[in-house]
Image: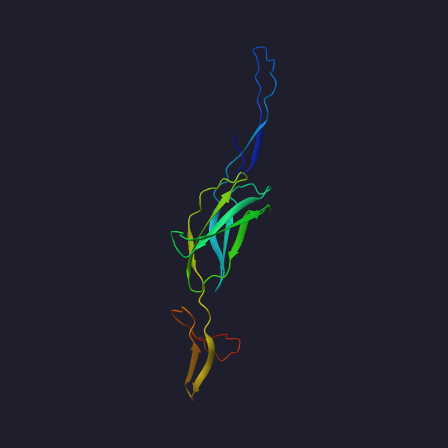
Length: 178
């Protein structure tokens, strides 16, 4: 049979003799199919302190509320990973959730797995990683002006590796020079 993932199925059986006379039915039994590993797991939005991950339900039944466990860690071996459980009951095939209060300019690793209605988990998806944005520099200002020169200064952004400065004669910064 071609069964649907994470779905409860019921069955009973009876026997027939050579004259096709049926016995009584057995008691009804039930089982729940396993959930499939979520599909297309990836980062879809990123900020200084937030990362959003998205995935597809990959055929998991959402009518009863398939659960998904998402884990985030700064360790690629997922040691000490933070695991959050989410239940989705909509018919959407694309699912997203965010992880908040992250450290700026830090690499994070993530995975997701599905949990069927009986609490049996699927395998984790392949791991994805991303780096959160650096914080913006502070106290940006002109400090020295001349006829053909302008000097700027700023307060360093925590963990920043480089800086880009955009100069323009247009207040909307169109046509600026980096």
